[in-house]
Length: 292
Image 1 (spheres, rainbow, N blue to C red):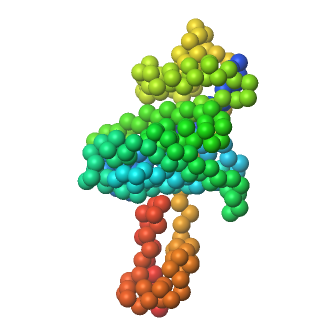
Image 2 (image 1 turned 60 degrees about the vertical axis):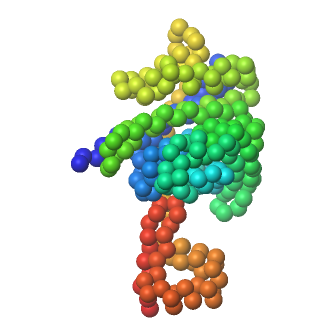
Image 3 (image 1 turned 90 degrees about the vertical axis):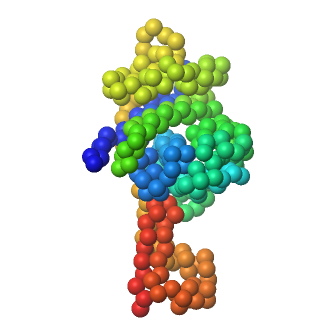
């Protein structure tokens, strides 16, 4: 089978006349890498994919040395999602139940009626701030939009258009996503109009168009959102697209396991296991340790 090779891209910019910041991109490869690494079923794939592309958008809110640790918890079969996002554009994540469809066949039954989002921002291992928000939104992009609006107090909205295909080695056709945020001088009534219109069929059609190049999509999308005959005044630039990257190593996981289990329990585990191995939760890589 042939694996598709569409390249991810990301733009950041400002709708200048209306004081709205935006980030837009197609994160197909990022979403697909995470989905394949964790062998997710379709419902879990939609949840994990939505979380990964939302994390990609949020990476622009960080300085290079900063990092977000994001947890989305559900009191339901899906369990929750974990994300790790760096200002350098490295994103990794996992869903606690990658085969949730054995218990729930829809997103609604998989996630339940509410979610709790916890976000910790750090720099070089030092916690800068942390916040938590509980909401009735369960899709990752909606839950994170709510968190940014309520906890960070920056009116935000994230719209994600994940399209899948029946291709085992390349199941993600596209993963377009747009984040808008109100800057200090933004008219909030105007912003609320934008946040409602980005979910309309017309906006989704522009987002997922296969005939428009990325710059044309941005211009046409904001022309539609603003309800103007001409393209509104936009200032945007292409930036490096985030990628799925896990910095785990055998040594790091070994040291972490020793700390978590304690020296005595760790030594006992090694005695009982002839082929010790540790699996990284974020990338599902299994690290083996030869007995000495």
